[in-house]
Length: 251
Image (tube, rainbow, N blue to C red; front, side):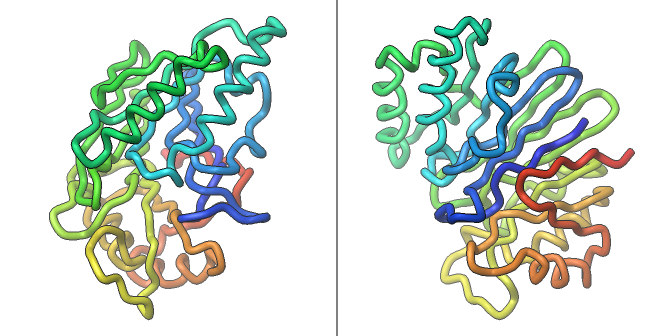
């Protein structure tokens, strides 16, 4: 299993960085975990659109806004005869706080260039070759961690989450890789527990005994190595990977 890092910053993309997105290749299947603005610049077209499943962790725009671009792109490649299958898109079940986001996406799907997208308002996806499961975590709207189990390796992506009462320690137990948000450095102050401090992400990785921790969800203006150095004090097997590069999971 390998993962290509497409975007690592929030809440906005910049000239050098994209909002969250991670392309996981497992048993010849491709899974795009979140779809933040700018990630298309690191996708290979049309190859990455074939046999692709997109999974959105929650309804914040920095995690789904590039769907608009991928929809039009898929329509173009379909008309050129270079895209054979529909792209599956899995969205969380909406609640009263997120229903407008869901309805917006559903309404936009009625446009012709969205015809390649099959939307599933469901957070329970079991694939024939890869088991994919979800775990709800505390955030200001419902946000789901995502686990992909290839049979040999396990990858967990945190989505957005606070620290108190989150499920990541048990959900990512003994995983090969935990991709975890680390929005705040220790000198910053968060008003509410909707995101993680870097040391909290490292503590989760340590307690879960994962093989490797990949930090993400950085402030656009702060170098990622500052997050890495802080996390490695608690969990030495912490890494950051530049956008556009691939990472192979450790066995």
